Length: 330
Image (cartoon, rainbow, N blue to C red):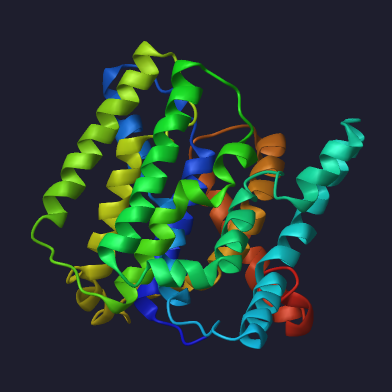
């Protein structure tokens, strides 16, 4: 795949956001100032998964899937690229489930369907790959495709908010976050932005507006509904993420950073982006081990990110490519 440094930079930012998201305990923050900062930071990090989906859609926009043979070959390549590494890195969780004497049928279902840790994203992206011809068709038009995808996602997230925060139902992550309709607007928007330009006049104020509304919505959920976790599942959070993505893809920022791609910080983050899939696969395992050895600290994410990068770099130097592709480190 031809690499575009700017999108590697975005992947780097997104995976750093993901690691932060999974390592900082927002429920432990006390006092109005810390709560305000924590909620604002959490709402910014919420854009990480939508950003990854939009980037994936962007690069899938022009993939050839118009013949059965091309479509079959595409699915085969992507299965090796994303699904098999998920199975490999789910083995430790399967072993832990066995040691804790959890239901074996449930454990095997979780293993094959991305139910362990945060691997729902793999199952999610596999669904978009399987439906890529339809996604590409939706991504060709604004009114008939993108707006339809936005309507589907907003309807899903609205229903989910009611179930999670009003009725306080306990729904497994893989059940509510794994089905493709919830996130469809981000993948389709990525496809659309690959081949269309966007007028930025209203994008910047909408990014600010929906961010502020997302923060306000979080406080309502926290203080009036007693919910602290799962604050990424909100209508205004999704809308903020949508316009944030449009801003990143279509604003002059791409030209600005591309012209400065050799600067140390830009180049370093882009390098992290090149191995973002590997970091995604192993960082929660590193997090789990680190918490057992050192205890929980909010800024463990720096150590987790460093260890994950070191493991991947060492593997890339020591393990043949023919093996690395099956563990997600290619």
